[in-house]
Image 1 (tube, rainbow, N blue to C red):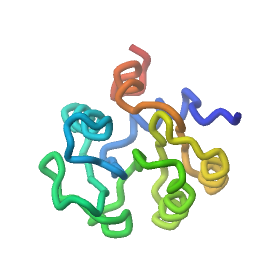
Image 2: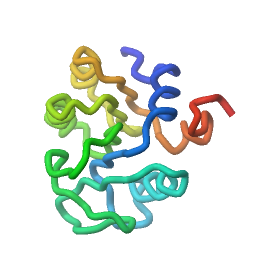
Image 3: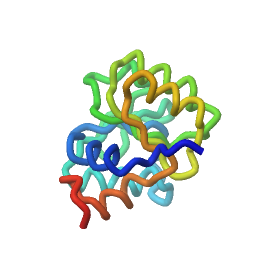
Length: 142
């Protein structure tokens, strides 16, 4: 398995990200995507929900696809079945978004390698909330 959880990538993403597109964000409070996004939002990150099933999540307008976002996020955080990651990586590359974060259990080695080869920082199979609690917004270990 390739290392897609490099500490330097994690620190850089946490320190430089201001806006996060959360793909697969749910309105249901018991879903991990909701809890993680709510936590990140409460720590100063702007959340752009991406889910065609909803109009609004966490007080933010929800968009059906990355291509529909009104602004380019710094990071795409993915809470989707790994089956969808390859197509999503193509969208992230095409949009020029510099960072891709695949949450715990979202694993697609080939798609992650493709994203990294295109110049993206990639973190895979890690929880952004847990890493933020460990490193903090500055990217420094706590």
